[in-house]
Amino acid sequence: MKIAFEERLEGAEGGAGDGPAYDPDATMKLDVPRVLGAAGPAGGPVLICIGGLHGNEPSGVLALQRLFHDLDEDSRGLCGRIIGLTGNRRALACGQRFVDIDLNRAWTYERIERVCEKREIVESEDKELRSLDKALHDAIHGSNQPFVFDLHSTSGDGPAFVTFDDTLRNRALAFEIPAPHVLGLEEELAGTLLGYLNTKGITAVGFESGQHQDPKSVDRALAAIWISMETAGVLEKGTRPEVARARAYLASESAGLPEVVEVRHREPVEEGDGFVMDPGYASFQPVAEGEHLARRGEEDVHADRSGLILMPLYQPQGEDGFFVIQPVRPFWLRLSAALRRVHIEKVVHWLPGVRRHPGKSGVFIVDRRRARWLAREVFHLLGFRKEGEDGEELIMAPRDITTESP
Image 1: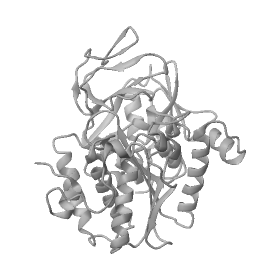
Image 2: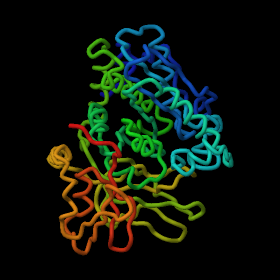
Image 3: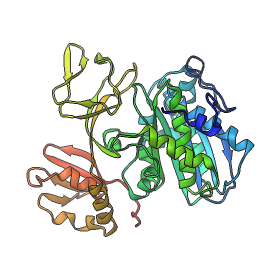
Image 4: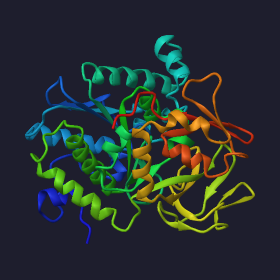
């Protein structure tokens, strides 16, 4: 029988600790400060955890409140700094995903320049972006080892999983968490906080802890934070039993699930298009090609391939109806790491159908009519993501603007 992470910590049936309890009716609307808490000495590595970037996802905020309650009572092992930040405060107070625009689609250089430098505030989320951007800069200042952990939850049922831009430095943090790892999600979503931080050379990983109102989503988020603290060097290795218990808990929750998957399809949703997901789907549930999954107005929506469904949409706000994912063999990950370490991307323009982009350094144009053999997948192995496409040509850009280290 699976038991909650904090029950494991307390060693007593039903024990939820002394931190804030999860009451779905009472906690879907939260009035919380931008800085939820901070602990540990400055000057070393810093782990910044962000909860509530979407206002109907309270689990990350509640997990951080529990964490800082525990650290206030016992700070053993802290050798770096852990900082908890709130994402979309106004949306959290309303209990909805966003007020005007999705804050986790707003992190583009153009918008950040307009909002943070020119101070042109239009939407409610512009104020949130400016405030959170400053809080992030303040938290990172003075550390040459910043890590960011972005905590989310999903509208549909399903297990926890990890998301990240597939760089080697991100892998080092992500693969310490014993949960399925989803590759390629960032390629389908523009303007995410993780994508923006990644271009800044900051190690940044996301964690989806389960359904919004599931009490276990808080337990899973808290477990992932404990593991990330030790991985980031904020917590001295082996000093806190919470870490081992967290690993065991998440491993038991993820038993039988694939270790690594990659996004193969995104079903877009536009405001007013009448998208309605069929009931009963949960993340990582198998779907067959041609299976009826949803309706868009009078149109039927079917799976365009077989695989596993991810994040079926069961909420009024959102731009993604569902994703279809497929497992990735561990061999390909080991091969990709080896290829990146020898910088084989320096010679990929020699391949048929591949040429350097005339206006962008490090970017390649791939003609799929000539580079027929899994062109996109090969570039994924080398650390590239699809930046765009023009007919039969793919534009592939490096996921990491910095040099990947062994």
